[in-house]
Length: 344
Image (tube, rainbow, N blue to C red):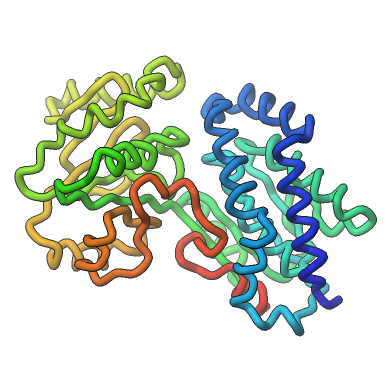
């Protein structure tokens, strides 16, 4: 059946309105936080707002889809299976949105970490669809699908590779994000960096876990900009991780810096344990450019100022404070989900 793009956009806009005022969303946000302590009211609301304001506005949707003239002749009765992660609230929504605007039948396997809030949004979309709502289903196991989008850990990625080897697929594993500092950042940029690091407790692939700083940079100068997240010291589940990893560092006499909520360690690795932030000194942008190229398969976002982006010769960096506010055309792992779905 030919995809009715205008109709689909109108329904998505309606969903955005419901996200802001439907009582079921209010209840779902409360229940989600009760089940998953990392889904605090502030972070859940931030995720809902980001989706409503950046992904479910009519003008933004129309502008986004203008880049795909294939929609004018596209039709499908195929089914796409989506395996969602649950590390941060509504992390799988963009995949659902892409499949929906393309007109696919959609079977969704939810993460147990985010099976309340996402399920409620799917219910709302089913109701908006009316009789056609059965095109979107939550399933325990993917069966009878034509393509798949699966997001998970590095271990589950190995399973995905084998199980979905004979189907068109987008498969995602662990990634993380880095930030490049020059020492010339403004106060607002460093406050934004705090959001890039600490929003959602640092559990997202778009969260910064590694800082690249110039030789001689005083890493302790960043601590005051992190004060807006001092409340995390009162979060028991987060602090259990902090206490555990701090004890290991102290027992092993590993050099590190710490305040009440985060530890910073000089380390060449990218991915950090929860409550840890790595940093590494660089000599010049040219050498850093080569290192980032080698590591690109493991990096989701590079955060830096516009002048640094220009020096890197790299298009697609993210400004300070923007990592957790992706736009419609910010595709995970740099793989264009719409182009993939239009090609199946």
